[in-house]
Amino acid sequence: MVELTWYGHSTVWIEDAGTRLLTDPLLRNRLAHLRRRRGTAPRLPAAPDAVLVSHLHADHLDFASLRRLPPDTALVVPAGAGPLVRQALGASAAGRCTELAIGERITIGGLDVTAVPAAHHAGRGPWSRHRAPALGYLVEGRARTWFAGDTGLFDEMVALAPLDLALIPVGGWGPTLGPGHLDPAGAAEAVRRAGAAWAVPIHYGTFWPVGLDAVRPDRFHGPGDEFARQAAAVSPATEVRVLRPGESLAVCRP
Image (cartoon, rainbow, N blue to C red; front, side, top):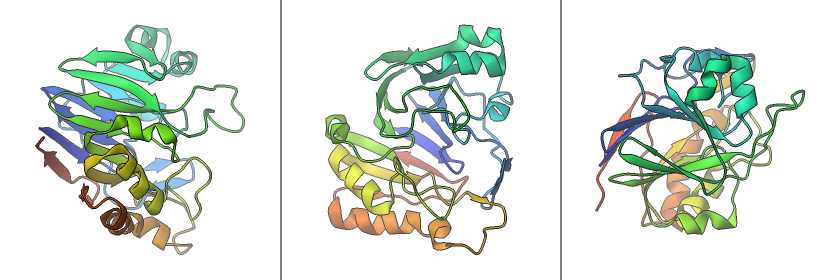
């Protein structure tokens, strides 16, 4: 069985085989021009055994949030992200930071964690020289869980099948979606390709730019339910559970 709590955006607490993981922690209510409009800043139940970071964008690799975790928390990041992490968190971070390239695996407690592809921008931002290929992670313990990170569709999704659980992005934090993102229809196709028994939509309905509350509010509120409708049509074998930030789910392997 895998137990999870979605704290909003791409921040998910995963417990499996006695091991606790935290994905892309964004643990505060404000990030630059974005503010949390649903849920509250996460209060974690315990210290995670490790953090999985999918890519360098500031809403996924948030150093202010990482500083709120115990200083010995293990970090798993894309290959090439190490220099940026050490620059932000200090040289001591090198001893607890593992860089993974696609296909590489690490054992964390009772879990095997494998870096898998993601179709998303590799940079930190338009003014940064830091680059590292974006990743998803396949977490294998009592269940097979895919944390997709932030991604568009790619052919290799079929190689992930079969999955017990997919944590799949279905939107974003603004009224438009650029390349390298999944909308509800794309996310439904992704879980079909990946053969997911269960799916939880993430990366939507949490943060929104200040001053844009009235601009395309459907892009904030609607993606989770729309994903459930799309998945029922194209991947009827997938059980979708739409959570609110702070809600939990336990999935038992058949």
